[in-house]
Length: 316
Image (cartoon, helix red, strand yellow):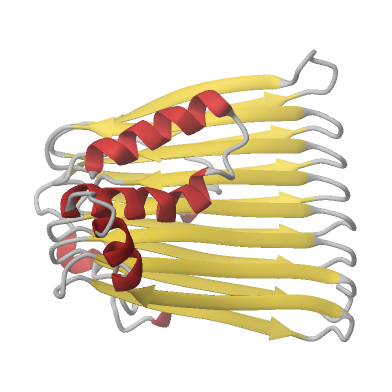
């Protein structure tokens, strides 16, 4: 096992809710008993410059019943190169899928990253992503979370070179007693960088959502442009959403914003649609689709966008 792989979550030493970063997410309590750990599987994706249209990778990681699986992805996008990665998650039964993804973007490199998480509703899914973005590079991601009994997406990004850009977008659609946690830390270390976080959540039944997003602007990171917005709709009085947007700014010349809203479907919008003869169930579905489309419209690839919107519609 590599040194990097050794830093992933350990089934014998799971974080507890006493730790601030895990305050809302009961990983240790939710972890299935009797899972069999498997050897760490490592995959390397090395994207070089000069490929016409850039490089494209499509990977499927399947959970196996009864196993605690650890997967480590090393992604290196060289200076000037472009990569599109589609990362799909599926499986059946009870398992823990533990993913660690390390991404390095060279000067002027670009990466588009789509994650479609449809793991078994009896599984646990944890994903730790580390991103290092050098000068002029750009990382653009979209994550759909609809599977797993408990899922956590933990992103830590460093913008280390001037004019680096980071766009994190996602949709979480959860029901029954699912728990979905999105935790983000963005380190603005260099001047003239941009980051944007844009997430939408729809929670039904007794589902629980978590959004913890922190932006840390270092003193040297003048001319930073950082925005963060998380909006959630609760379809049930028993659903719960915990949000914790944070800004920590040590530079003077910046444009930064953050916010989070949680509520129910707008009564006035519902009344307007019902008054025009639209059935309540249809009106509800249309309003939810429009709400989530604000996030899915940010998907750059039309084929993937249509596929994700189809998955959302089936969930509704």
